[in-house]
Length: 434
Ligand SMILES: NC(=O)c1ccc[n+]([C@@H]2O[C@H](COP(=O)([O-])OP(=O)(O)OC[C@H]3O[C@@H](n4cnc5c(N)ncnc54)[C@H](O)[C@@H]3O)[C@@H](O)[C@H]2O)c1
Image (tube, rainbow, N blue to C red):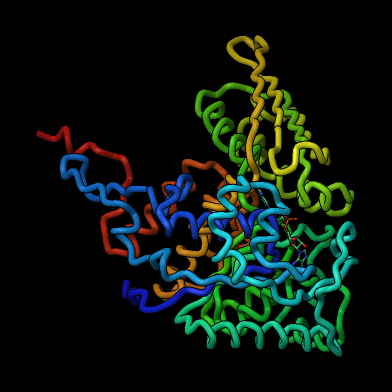
């Protein structure tokens, strides 16, 4: 494949400048200033094996594929309150005050732009830093103008948009989403089925800017925006960052299945006290998240193929808003399993995690990989980035791959494919031939 080399600044456009976005940007600044290492980021620390095991070729991924340098990244974003990133970082309470103070000069420079926001989709939040317009098309054009101004002022060569905004209420794809022409008419008519996240995505895709969806919102999971992505030659990826409990689930479940261990029940509950937790306290927003979280087990365990092991599995997921914890979520899993002759056993997991600390390196990797995909001429759904998502996007006729290790193999083979390297099948019989 022919991949253009990165040749200038990369703009990162973020609708939703909250805990995840501020932790990501502050983290990149801290790494640039050598105050910290990019822990959790495959693009920065990951390696890739090339050729045979005897060749000992294991470069860093960032030395293998032409990724943009962190020093060339510039940021902007939209939110519903007029704050700068320094204020947001302090309010979010993820990073130590001391670190935020050291980064203050950089963080204070980033102000948030006025949002396209509608309280009907995120009922628990209100803000006054919000755009007005004659219809939704007008709002989309204002976002396009924001992006063009940012591109000009910062002289960015390429841009990537990544949604780090709140979870919108649950709704399904409908007629207005079924084609680009209906969607564009819907924008002019301010159709209530077009949510703010779709308006940002439309603006990005119109400009050929790759779009990633970090939340479980419907956003680019609709034919209209997928049509636009193909038409404008733009990669899209989603949805819902795979961070705490679902990450653990997609690590443990494939292992139990590999050993043909049965599972009777999987109960997952969380306490969480950040703004995301507050938004998810609304049952209609939680429903969006629940759908995204529930899918993983069914797809990994395939109860229709393994009825003896998984057909009676009871799976429940709960998120409880509990302000004292802030961003430091605690997730409990109780897994009722059974083994030889049906004898029951249990696994208990208590994950004291930090939501935004787990999400920030995912944002970094997605931005860099989507920029790479664009330069490689990829367009539409980027299934090879499933590794990063709770609810990976695929073509309608394909089931999503949730097993973290299959996702990893797919991602690395895609990078090998980009660079014309042999794909690795793990067959390895040739080592034993003589
Ligand atoms: N942190 C994690 O581990 C994790 C994992 C998976 C998914 N997510 C998702 O990522 C998103 C961000 O999470 P967070 O913890 O940063 O939440 P957060 O509440 O701190 O930040 C979200 C921000 O989006 C803003 N917002 C809402 N609607 C907007 C709009 N239309 N335009 C512009 N801004 C808007 C809110 O005001 C808020 O500041 C959420 O949707 C969350 O569900 C987070």
